[in-house]
Length: 123
Image: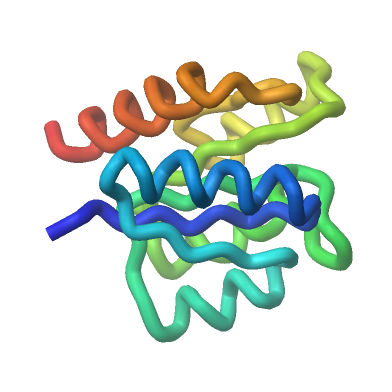
């Protein structure tokens, strides 16, 4: 069975690109354009990894992680952002991010980061 990813990103072009790359790599991929729509998907499906942007309309990616990890503490979540700073990275890691990726994204780098997160979860 293919590993399932949820991409939470409000930038359509980037989200479509990541979805295409990961589907081509053999993953099952869903996408959400906000934390609220991600929560709706998470009520009906489980994911091996959630990949979320920090800056989202409404609830931030950090808040998404914080809220979701209350009910699913073992959920692997990766964060991506174009607005990287040391304080943002620390906040994301404290909230439970398994990795912190800075945009612009390189597809090969993203695939390696996802594979590392999934392999770490399996061990």
